[in-house]
Length: 183
Image 1 (cartoon, one colour):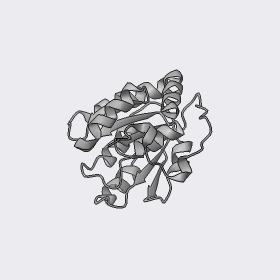
Image 2 (cartoon, helix red, strand yellow; image 1 turned 180 degrees about the vertical axis):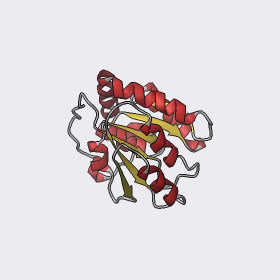
Image 3 (cartoon, one colour; image 1 turned 120 degrees about the vertical axis):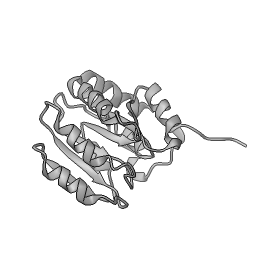
Image 4 (spheres, rainbow, N blue to C red; image 1 turned 90 degrees about the vertical axis):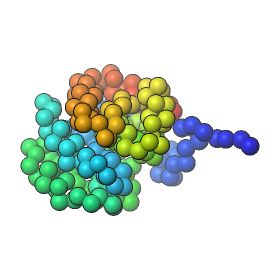
């Protein structure tokens, strides 16, 4: 038996097969938040509010998965922010959203492989036990900063610190971008 494991064997959709080397903008303009098909910990409203506390000027694109059970809470959180927020409901493709983002806040599932492929610097959170090992692999490779576990009450604070550090450091964003695309 031969096991083909690791990012180099990830099965990605065709839209991710051939992508150009990412050019990292000096001043970030867009943050992507994607937490997967569902949000069992109801983190999206808190993530949106956390981004509001950051001193930079940017837009937010939030992907709303098809199984979100708290859409009204997400919409209410987005409506109360001064940063422009675009809610994208269950998109068929996320590639262009990822390409347009200067950094992402993401759950630690399959989406991480896609974010790495497009070279979008990412801060990730663990929302399921089966994500822990791959989060460590992506972190060791220099692609992402881990923000913590979804059940941790200090998660939003940890995410805030990690996102703020990336917003302020263009070299770190460029290094993470290159590390992701290299993987």
